[in-house]
Length: 352
Image 1 (cartoon, rainbow, N blue to C red):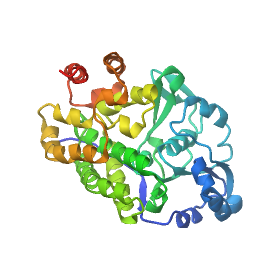
Image 2: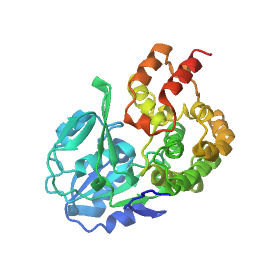
Image 3: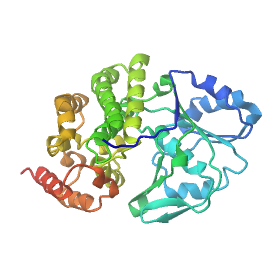
Image 4: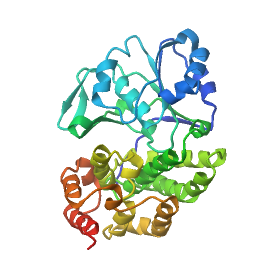
């Protein structure tokens, strides 16, 4: 047996976010967040707490940040030596891109820094329980005009700390609670049917699958439960520690064009194919690990009312063929024979 596992992020779980922010030792802080936290007064709380230590605040980070966003943020990190990212995966991904502290260039579907400058450390406060961006070295940048998704991957982009205060997730409505948790489920399952799987990633993935299949249906019925929010937050930690060393695979590879073309939330786009993929997973150790969870996973989608057929999302045969012909490199991480899988997916949509 031979494998590598690395994750340098310091995790603090179950703490009050303002207590952590108050102790940050820096006089030049940038706060990144989204409009909802500005509207709820949380940005103002942080500004009041930090005073002159907080040099800049940007509270308009959108979902799925597009590449043109960064044209207007080129100088925002000037004289900044610390970033607070309070929000979901889009906010944290934006912070990671800005932490590179360099202009970027595009090459072969990926983004690279043009200069090597000191990276700016990040304290990430995730407010959703799904993307686990705070625990990975990747950032996703979208270009919907050209139907492209770019990735920036640098080991220096791991956050300095990931701080989990489950109360920050209480504002999530039912749909966002479901879609973000299903993103974590996809991360977990995809880390198992993965050529890069290892015992540490797999054990973390199993922990996440158990927590999500058990507690997500309960949470959807009781969105104000701190205990259930905590359990799904913990699941997202396990999921992040699972796929940080494996990357995602075929379900995510299909999801990106689905999100761009059909405007389907990422967490749904990357998860609704899981039951079909699991049913058609080739004989392997991954199949032996995942098959005991097949019924629980299928029942989860039924109980949540999440459809699992391409037709339910307005995707016809020709569109599916185009999606399958545009798969990015993540698809190659999976244990599936991609050509056989393409035929199986087309047969499914055609009812064969």
